[in-house]
Length: 322
Image 1 (spheres, rainbow, N blue to C red):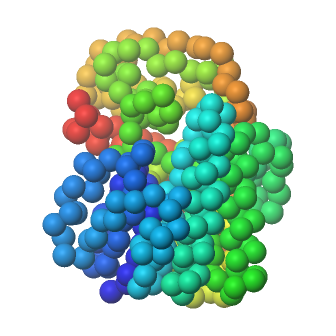
Image 2 (tube, rainbow, N blue to C red):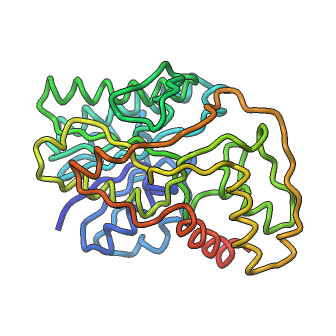
């Protein structure tokens, strides 16, 4: 039985990780301040004897130290996501994503955890035009959010070299799936479009719809976290990995898939028109990951492509949020 601390454990990715490792028989501690996470994501775990909830903020060093006590592994998911949010409020994004990250690194170091796995971001590739994205070639960041996530990688690298910590960063590419929040100003595109289509509202695409993304289903992300946490390959540690599928889908194609899959539940959705708006500041045109490094060093094999993931996600939203 492993002792695992999951920061941001009431959020979309974090709550899926909590659920997964509890089902595996591990002891899970969730740290969350509920700024973007939700109690309903973890409510069913609260009475479980191997689940502990700490309500607290990673900007508080004492809270981080308490949460790391006695833990074998840290899966650090806590962050303020969203490029637009960071553009609107760069100071808070920096406080949480940089200062909070540093607090967690120090706490994990002092508690002598075995390994520190953290959520990095594909935004780190910035203005690099090369496709597919390979881990060793990045550009200049295009948003405050991207800067914070790159700083995380730099700090993790320094802590591994200076203090002998084992750190692995997972550069997430447009993760989607069950429990992802469809509401609010900074909602991700897939859950937002799903809810709009379910309500027969027109989804709004920023730009022409030709921008493409490597949309990554939550089960692939869970697999990467587990493999990064448990890998016994010395070459696999103290580096970063793309966490993606290795395929890209345009926003126009994405909407077509969503209409098709939701149309199985409600044929009226097939008639909903798409609206096109202005391009969004800080957006990169195309994103496509190479996952060869993760396959080679971690044995990663994505289980869900975009279609398989969307079918499962759409079913979850239809059953839970209609």
